[in-house]
Length: 302
Image: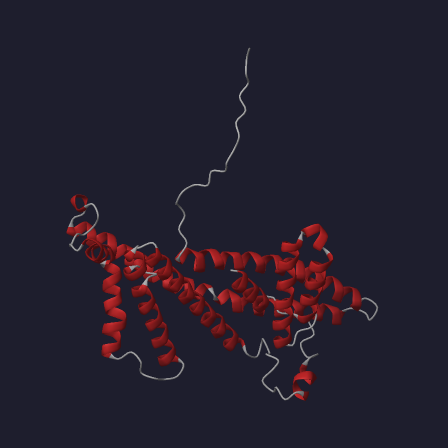
């Protein structure tokens, strides 16, 4: 989470100047915030500075760093947000796919560690889910972006259909692996064939919908890149409409407003991505509740 949160914050809130202010603010408030919070704020500021450099954004000035990249021969930088919108949105989805795959791998590891074969092998976030999701993503990328016919019949059967069957029959398959016998559920008396089909049909629908919604949810990463650039464009437009004496005040107030409002929104949105799209795939509540050691004092009467 430390890595992904820092990375996503920098992508969504990329500005070299504003990132520098966040770093300085984190260092300045180290005594009041504490070393851990100060370090977190500082790292977020550094990430914002790095991506702000790639975007060529410095307090809303989008052309300021262009001569620097031209002199060092990097013609493809800085990224022009409004001219490369498709690239930014596609990259955001690609980051989402990568993070979801990593989350599935973590779930598989935890499942094998706990000897939960339904979770590790046959679950929607297990090996079957990983093969299905990765295959569909690879097929769509190859077909739509590179015009390569990936979705052949063997590809669909072995990498899409069979994993779906494994997910659909995850409970009896896991019981067969664990107990060496075939049962529809742990409590077979309460599970008929009809109930099994209906229940798993709707769960499969939910799983497939979650694959799509979780992936598309990462579009907000690219969306906030555009949002940040758009808000700073508004600030620069307002500054140009003012007199020369008022322009510095508009620039400062505009940057502070964007930093506070969008910084807070971005921080909250990344927490949402972490919880729903990443943690929900491998984290489970439960286990033994923590009970700290305590001391009881009883009154003694004579």
